[in-house]
Image (cartoon, rainbow, N blue to C red; front, top):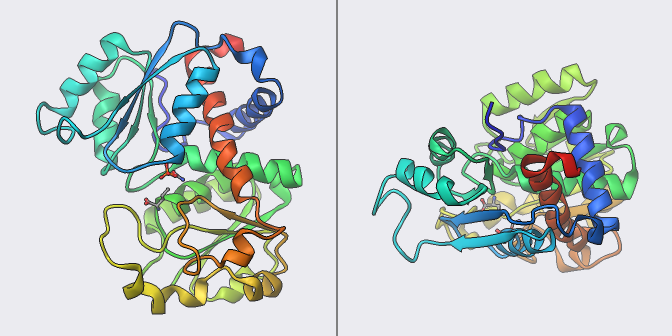
Length: 306
Ligand code: CP
Ligand code: NVA
């Protein structure tokens, strides 16, 4: 079977724990891994904007002794000049892996179908599994055993919510998505997460009431408007403001840690005092993108090194 990382569900609980452990090792002793991807090239494709993902993959691959090649939309959208199938067939003759940030998940499944090398999802409309890995690496650093935690996500049910929910379920973390009516996460993914959570002694809850976040160890925010949706933030402010992560919410829930995948819109989904405050692990979380992704790339491309 070809190795892929399209939804994150390719890795079960044991494989995820191994990956997180490897990420901690890479973070602690980076020089031990400086040749792990020697002679390997990774193409990073982007249909959407990025700061963290682009740089953490590029710099991370470099630190593993590999070569990253960035491809954006300057030559036109993927599928316009030539088909996604032909992208995959050509790229995989030269590269050892493809990391892709795409508009539609179906682009990733087509890339994966025709690529002879691993394809990694670095965000699509449905999932952001590399983000979730970094988030759980951060939670593990803060708390140790993540299976004892309750994590509450507040805001729009989206790609980040889905990946967090699925990884929480896999690792046995209780998960609550607190989203306004009409902005709930995808019902099918919630169902899938519920099934996985039940196998791991965890729970998944979706609610529009912020009281559902009470007792959460960690609170998590994402933008209220995702890339590709041009709705001005001001227009959704009234709908989402009750879900803002602010000092009052942190106190009400009793949370001791605050996360945000970024880019953040200060004073919208999170206030600056919380984002810059003591409970915020947001910059640690951003740093961990690189360590988590490096662990993933080593596992996919040079498992004997791990
Ligand atoms: N969190 C995240 O994926 O950030 P970028 O969109 O900047 O890559
Ligand atoms: N939900 C956001 C995540 C950005 C990292 C988006 O898709 O734009």
